Image 1 (tube, rainbow, N blue to C red):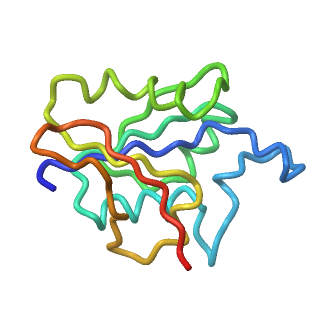
Image 2: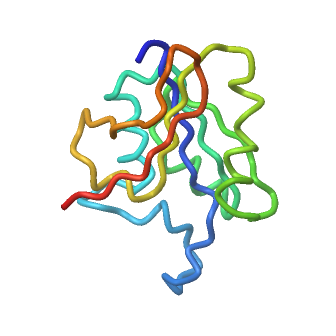
Length: 134
């Protein structure tokens, strides 16, 4: 894929974790979960990475290493995954990027792994295919 970009969904509250902390800031092997997802996107040669923030947005942004390829949009109301993706759409509108949508589960993927995408064509657009490992 040429001109690859990513949207990382990081606005959720993590209610099931029963914590006041944003779930994506919890460490996994010494790094915040969200940093591992960002690293995956950057290692996969994404030219731009849009992170959708919401709950405790300041703490989410603060736990990330600075990188000029990162952009942030806010989802002020948590209205679901589709709504979160819609918050990022204006950043990529008319830019010709193929856009990979990553969620908090993405740190489980090996480095440099871009999951298989269905419906990929010559037309740029939003690409997402849930992938389960056996």
